[in-house]
Amino acid sequence: MPNSENTLVTSNDHFEVIEKTTIIDSSWPTHEQAVEDQNADHFICRDGKVFAGTHLIIDLWGASHLDNLPLMEATLREAVEKAKATLLHIHLHHFTPNGGISGVAVLAESHISVHSWPERNYAAFDVFMCGDAEPEKAIDVLKAAFTPTSVKVDTILRGETLEADERLEA
Image (tube, rainbow, N blue to C red; front, side):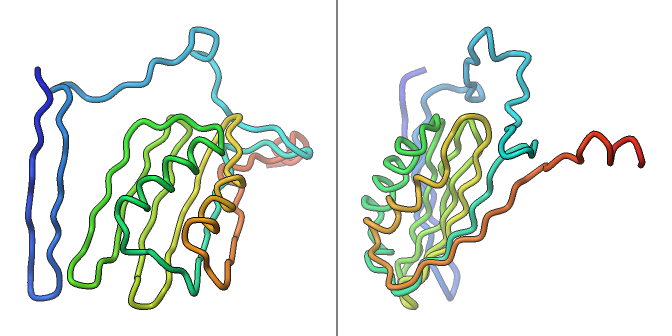
């Protein structure tokens, strides 16, 4: 099937969404996992803890360029690269008239999502990655692109398992 582009315009009294989707193939996207990885669950063992992945909740305040769609896409791509993750797909929505952006970079290791409010100079990013990826490296990429005056990062270890002794007691 040749590549084609679909454009969908949705609006109400508060916003208009222009969504462009490039269709590459009629089948669902897949990610070819290396043969040696097929039995791996990609849980992380670090500092005596075992968990599914690191989820960073990142708030940028006093940020700029939060309505710049090409910059947002380029920043997500760079964040994925710096974090040593595998990009599968980026999907962004640009809202009008305020220019806010919502979207996600879908990764083999999980995702990076964004919701921006340029009228408040605020953006919320979620960076969740499992395996050998380094999600913390995305923070500096976001700072450089959007030059916030304040950054708040909360870290959650998703799927943290109980220690062996605690499992036996349960």
